[in-house]
Image 1 (cartoon, rainbow, N blue to C red):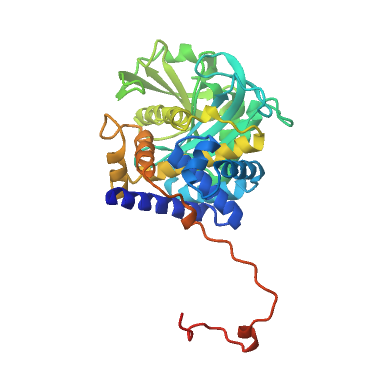
Image 2: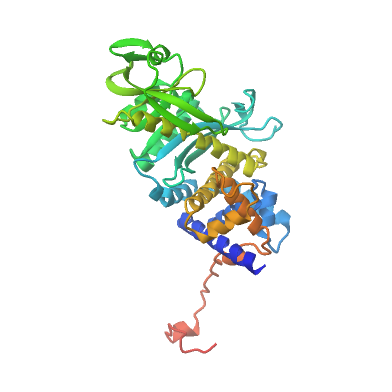
Length: 428
């Protein structure tokens, strides 16, 4: 038990130090709320307030703890400050080679009737239109292990007052990315973003991008406007690449490198990367990445293929924490819960980057229930290891939360009368 007590203490301290940094601008009440929520989410691996409350092990009724968390979740209004401090913390993992994975996801709530602003979404799993919310997410891949750290996450609804369009929400996120990290990194986007609006945004802002294209896109090839699919069929692939797909299947593909322009931006030289052997039709990528070495085609393909990490991120968020089982009803509460869970996964991501050089992380891996010594997407093992360790804790975290200072008395004290400013001469 001593072994686990030591691990419990070390993990709680890690969480404590993390919260101290991101909550530096918050008052004590807000700090306590964020600390308790983050710790509860990590230990409970659940977004239910009842599960989070149980992990706090407070000397009051569970009902009162849940009511307090619910009340604070609804009223918390320091989202910008909290997330700004979080992005400052992960800024050291961002450079010009960082891959930013950009995508939309959804939360499906087909049986919920009382959630605020419940809109209509296309279920990514079934393709059906269901009640729910959309999520726009941007995740940066860490430099060592290419694990996703969320740098932007917003839940929105098409039934909400002020909602304009999905594209408006996407551009809001892209502008936040530009404001926070400038021109650093490579933006990678799926076919859903094959739109001249997004090409224009990245070209005008001189931001590097890789966008997968649809079959009906037109391009200018050798001065002639043609369908993109007819262009790539003229090539057979000069470069080779072997990789294992997200389903574990091995692919041996050939890649072509084709200079093009887009009809809407004829003065901008771009590259069309065609990947043959990935599916029935070639995978087609358009990018503004440049190099004198034509082997950049392989690099660009690898960059795009890493985009699947954000799909694993969404899957982890939903499965490990059962995110779609949210029970809070108000939109502000739902957004705050998403914000805190995003930060929690960011904490796990930071830990994952030190998996080879931290004794604590190695111990966490040992405590995880897994058939693999180390899986490719390690978030599950880290979360499971922490869960198994913290579940053996008999105390919460209240002893780590600074106590609020008692209000000073307005009554004149003897120390003020005699101007005694030090207690060093008193023996207690």
